[in-house]
Length: 495
Image: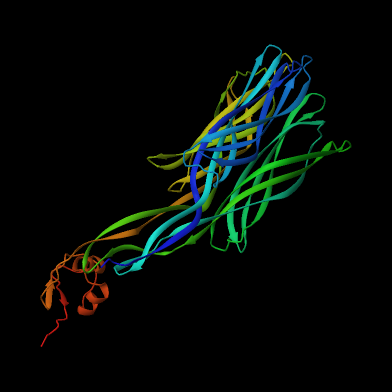
């Protein structure tokens, strides 16, 4: 007679894959550009779609340059270029949901003839989400060890918000370009909402007077409440916030020599709330009467941990893309940014990377030029496991104490979030084998190995744990050396 087994099916929603991809975009500016002083690119994602064996993502790259023309006047120009890219992965199929986060990893400027070309290398971090299923043994005519499979179900959410700020600066004539960097500092869950808090570092390069560049920045706080029915106090979550539309307006007060800047920012947020689910599954089983061949399965999911936020002030000698000397006058430090990786060292984990910015310099010949400055850093980070890392540079300054050398300082805002992975092993099936010989004795005494637990003994004796405990009420687990286990068997007397 075949052993009867009972199975159940788990269905959940989880991150199924992570991909990384790169693509490039380029635009051309006309012959009126004599010298490019500063260049900036920002990428706006329009969408991402999973297909058969690939993820297609598309959007637009906005290029901004500040340049000097032939008459040494500082001017600006902006252009947008659409792009489409693909990331190949055999596990992709159309039912998956794809999410993408774009970064500008490199920006290059070159001149060909009368034209100037600005190219950007775009990095894409892609996440795929979909249904995960598994069939697991839940019971039947077997002695089973049941445990809860700790797994995490992902609930995607998203939303948009508007934030405003106003601040006063010295009198300016025109805004040349602006750049924004987002730093998410805190992620919490409340009943029905994922809450992401952080700040936007707004960098503005402007003209002061007729032809003098000046830069300033502003940290603008935000709080995004993203609706999510699965969110509850105590849930883990993660969120990405990006800047969409930016509207800047300036009101001047010439009598006071001041200018008031009004900034309106449109932000979009994509979040994920992780709900812990613990289905009751069989992790081991045996039959008292037959050999049993078990098959096993594994359910792998992940969740996010608590975010860790650090603020560090760094300083040192900066590397330069072009030489400077005491005949140069420093005008502005703009387009500050940072990138870093987590590195394991003998003294612990560290965030190692570089903070960069564009230094606008007025030379002795009356012409402006842009010099890229780079300040390396290494900052200790007290966190373990697999993590996501983001770094924002702000308050960057540069001065020339010794001719040809730049002393730079910057403040780093570092956000680290641990990624926790869960792996549950379960019995997915059982196949009956040969019948086991029955013992004729009414009483058996066994000498267990020291350290054995109740389940290990029960499986070896092929008796239910309840029966082993009932026959040996004084036995404590794990067993100690020298203990004995008694098994009683009912005997049928035939007349």
